[in-house]
Image (tube, rainbow, N blue to C red):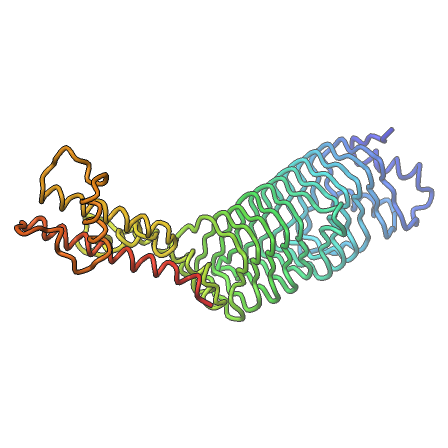
Length: 430
């Protein structure tokens, strides 16, 4: 049965009964139930006032029913290990303003509500493997001088069920492979001094990597990998990549890129499945990076997305847009901007059928015979399609409408043939 604490005096009484010597290097508050709002600064002060000198403070398998906080000023040093292994926090947890000179462990710990770690310096290890965060987590203004260990193997990965925020955090180790982020993840003004590894991870909410330039920059001082990742909604804003950034074989359902530059190597997009591109600039950037990598299929795909967005942006009712939108209209509905050769074949057949039928109706009128079941008309139709200079379909006496329809039909058919051939070109590019 767990020992219940209702205030700090209960904690000191418990230690006096169980730790005979104040000089004991290990203080054990394990398997206890803290029923009051715990201010760790007050607890540390009370222990020092009681003449306890210790190197390890253990809370393993304890429960914290109320808020737990640590608010220090001027990054005061904490020179002892703190172990919250297997603990259960039922209320808000906030740590701020401390410098941890020794290890602090949250191994297999459960946080039911919001967690905030801010203005902290970790000289040694912050261990979070096997930990579950059921609400939002904030890491702000942190300096991780040694290692931030989020997991050690496939069975003890940290679980983030709420939103996750990293703001002005310096990483010297960033192993997030195989993670599942159930909600939004934000990396803002974050510095990675190590490879950033997000391979095989699942980002089920929004994922934002951005810089607020008036405050600082998000910096990647080493390689970045999202290979085989599943990303629901990716946003890259105001970032410079000097090293490799790889999305090989990743699935990105939605992506937005603004003011991003890759100076070292082109964005690696081998086998990447990109769904919705949110704006024209994003499509243009991705297409440019695909061109650097000489990936014709991805270039064609992104060009289609870019041109569709440009087409939708133009207005039929603006004089300056009308001509461009007209040209793009035929480009879109012939082969979808060079993406679908099958659509091009359909465009040719439809243009042929409509223009030939219109010419015949203007020439012979509307009769009781369906022309596409009549052998004589079918022969004329094939000649109209196949022979560019065949004028027999017009007859001896023809009106201006027949001539215009003849010219318009021939233009559409030739245009469709050209567009279809152009759509095949992506299969021959290397």
